[in-house]
Image 1 (cartoon, rainbow, N blue to C red):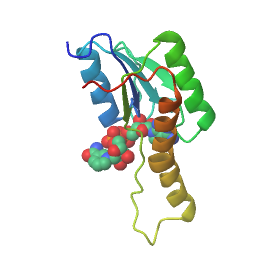
Image 2 (image 1 turned 90 degrees about the vertical axis):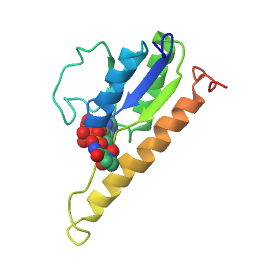
Image 3 (image 1 turned 45 degrees about the vertical axis):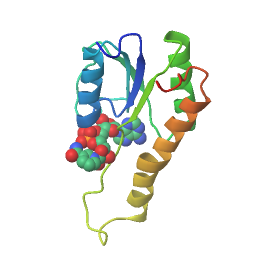
Image 4 (image 1 turned 60 degrees about the horizontal axis):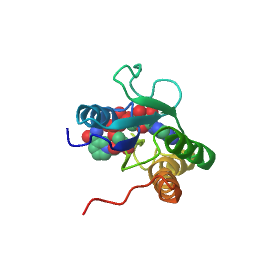
Length: 130
Ligand SMILES: NC(=O)c1ccc[n+]([C@@H]2O[C@H](COP(=O)([O-])OP(=O)(O)OC[C@H]3O[C@@H](n4cnc5c(N)ncnc54)[C@H](O)[C@@H]3O)[C@@H](O)[C@H]2O)c1
């Protein structure tokens, strides 16, 4: 078990990629926080796999701070952050509205910035192994 004693935080944890990463990390013995939008995410499943669900919209700074506060209070450390939350615009550029374009940047770019910086701000963040 390569991740025993480690804590991981996975955004988009109920999506296809995020869910697979959560499962693999759990299998390797990590404590895993699976963060996603409130109701089900893209796949409507319960977190009966042993991960700790965090209701999080990655575009919300206050929610990112609250999520990191929870990790600090419960686990006391964070070793791995995975930014797997994301959305895709399944339209041509001509069909895409400015609102949709801005939303994709908010989730895919600003969301990653927020989770990464709030993790780095957190006193729980562990140094990378040498
Ligand atoms: N699956 C692929 O082959 C592939 C390839 C290249 C890129 N991607 C990109 O990688 C990302 C993840 O892919 P996937 O297949 O797991 O997608 P997915 O749709 O299955 O999962 C994405 C997850 O992100 C969550 N999410 C969306 N907005 C969020 C927000 N504001 N806050 C928190 N969570 C949010 C969704 O609820 C969902 O559970 C997507 O951006 C996708 O476009 C996927």
